[in-house]
Structure formats: C-alpha cells, structure tokens
Image (cartoon, helix red, strand yellow):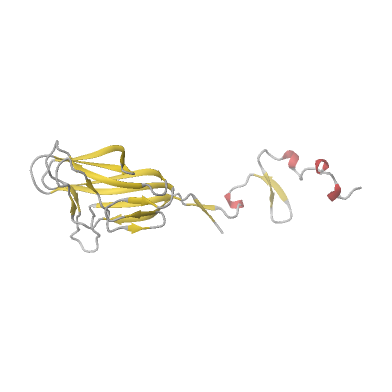
Length: 212
C-alpha cells in the first residue's frame, strides 16, 4: 500500500461528503476537528472590507455678504471661500477647483439667490465649466419680488484627471432687470451658523476599506 503522499493527484479521492455537496459550496472547518460543505456568508470571513463609498474630502463656504454681477449678460465667477488645499483637490480664493488626484467625485454646490431692490423680474442663470468649457445645461431662477432669497443646490458626478479644473458662474439675463445675485444670511438667534452665499462640498469615491 503506497503512502498517501505518494499517490498521484489524479488518483486521490475527493474530500469526505464531496460527492453529495451542493454546487458552489466550499469545504468549511467547523473548529472542532470536523468539516462540512456549505455556502459561506460574511460571518465566516476575515478581513472583510468596510464599505465607504463616497467620503467628503473638501468643504468650503464664502464669507462675503453678497456676490452680484455688475451688469446683465455679464458672467460672475462664484467664489466659495478663502481657499482650501487637500491631497485630492485645491480650491482657490476665486472659486476654481483643481483636482490633484484622479478619481470619481461628487461636486455639490449650495447657492442662495436673492435680490434686495428694484421692481421687475430678475432672471439669474448658473452653469458649471470644466477646463473652461460649459458642461450640462444652464440652471435658472426667476425672482419677481423686491426682497427674496431662494436656495439652490446641485451635485455634479465627475470622473477627474489630475489637473482638471471646475468652476461655476452666475449671470443676470437681459430678459429681466439688472438686479440679484448670491446673498449671505446671518441668523438672529445665537448659536446658529450663517447661511453662506455659496458653499462647495467635494466627495470622492474610495470603495471599501479592508479590515485588519
């Protein structure tokens, strides 16, 4: 009788119970010296990735009282604060977002449109520009009242290459009056943070993090 170690691989028998095991099950050690064929679940695995998906990597908000175009049909680049630099992206003090790392990102902006004076309807557009060229459609709000604030938000899904730039512009359309822009509102109640004229949040897709 040859030693088991010397038996040709093609002539060795399958593991016990393999002949009756269900397809796609695996041999599982039960921890008591015995084994079984079973479907595995997460409870049987080690070093399970922790799902993360998209995580915030940059946040900034304008502190100016208002951002208003100087005339109709004249774009104004939206600024989102003094500037922030992270490993993934840099936001300068004019509102230009430059990607330092390639990846899949969500760019979320919050704008607070408003007007304070003048009769007639104000028409305000906004748009995203990537590497200096507009992408997607323009968005618009119409402000018929003399004193009104309307919140606006949008999220842009973008697959970036290092060096790509993204910025945002607003414009007063000449079909309306020369009035309106973005306004900062400060709460009267203590303990409440201001509502900035413009806020930007950048999130990056990181997939999963493998546990130790």
